Length: 596
Image (cartoon, rainbow, N blue to C red):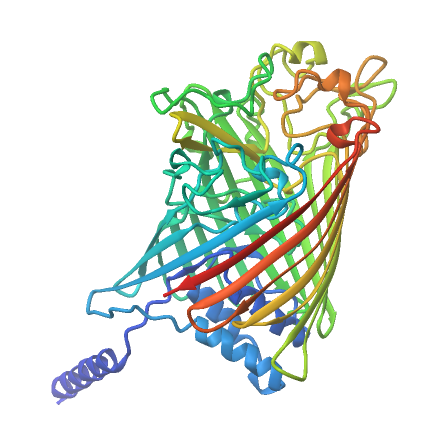
């Protein structure tokens, strides 16, 4: 009798299981949303509206993670406008393959964009880096995205673009008028960008974890003008990223690889910004960014806290020590100063009242342990290097027309040698004179390698952390109105005082009777070598002041067409850190997009 009952229970269990499998709809939640998507921002608006701290600030995010964020919200507390924002989010998270199928779903998207650029100063603002709306924001003429959903746990994406490359034969901005259309003057056929795809990866995951391998952008933090640990100013990371997330805790581990700085950084020839050979040059050396990040939600979800540790690991001989690939280790405790430079970050955000969030970041690059020398006018030592960022955000769903009001104010400070560190010659007691013979540093400066139609290879360098790098004091004020999925209009004012140090400044000991005695930002002299400017030590004699005031917006005409634009006024006092040298520019971008 017991055997028959056991068999009956087993049969009913199998039947019930088969019923569940048949009834469960096809659902794959492993899509990775780009940093350009409005979905995360809209979720953050609703979190603040309910008095909660910001959701995870470690992007990009999978569909499963965004849906988990949404589940925390109390939909019964939504007003009419907040409900409209909630419906917009739900619609964006309900994206399904255009061709659903048993096994592998498939989808595509096609976009076409025509942009025009006009500005007034064709002498000083002649690179994309000199434009406020830079290369990451400028849209390609044509983009085709291909997506696959294999089974329930995998996702793949590749985006192919037709666009002009970063280094045009007729330098970007060298004429009053420009466009993203191929072969429309001043563009020529050789400007065709052959470095895509910039976003291409495979992903796997479940309800509470995600793994991503390939090219994508990342952004860690709540900052508006940038973030101290990891900013979104890098065009892409060649990365492997794992994240596990829940309602109270999230863990992220990432490795990202870049060209070794010996390929482009040279303090003897001062040509770090020029072309470096062609595609036939042998690549050598390893430069790897590795980081782990832990996030907690505390005090009834009113406070969010993140702890991040990272290293830049380099090997000129292509050696990767597998012992360092430990997601649970303390990277600083490897004590491999000749191969790695570590960075530690603390982040906190707090929503004291509904719709208002206060946040802050601190990063520690170089500091003196008890017993170590603190640089002063009498004693020399390693330069202390810290970075600080803080701000306040206000968002409020308005009672009419499903609009959301946004406003923020932010301030940032970075020490003169933050993100920088010399690596190779002379040992830790290196002097400024020794550094002139050095060839590269062990910095939080990385480069994206790009080929252009003139059979040249360029290395586009940028800080991994704060967009404006070291030696800066910055303020940012932003405000605007947005209707998600329809239109937005924003105004922004940015002011920065930047000293003489930049990403090509050689790191050296500070203090003492002959050392660099400018311990705080902004500096007004450049005592060390510079890999991109052989005249830095003699010509840079002042901090420069940058003021940018601008407005931008977009409007969706229908489901296929939208228009957008941006205009900025830029004024620089003490241009290129030369006292009394001033310049300004007005930059205008107008565009129209078609999507299918």
